[in-house]
Length: 91
Image (tube, rainbow, N blue to C red; front, side, top):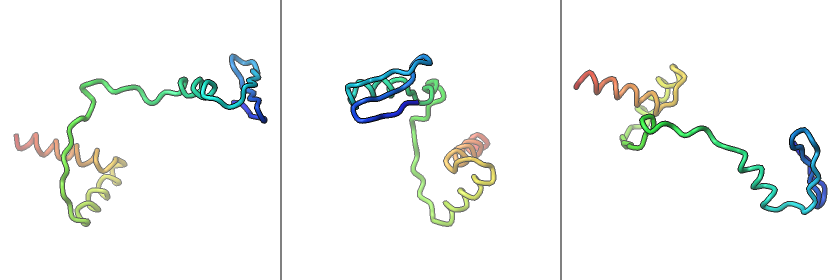
């Protein structure tokens, strides 16, 4: 954590307080942002790259959202699982 005063930034690095005097510039912020990473990338077999658009009436969409909430899942996740189970039964 750090704090900023006019043209001077103090932050901690390796448990030492560092004084950075050249003000707010991209080198300071890029050093912070480069250390920030998102979630790890998914394995290729776990990536979802294809999609389908399914037209729904408002009531149908609400029914899917209610069913998904009952299982604490996102509606798209719930719908994907239900559709895949149905497709496997029919295959």
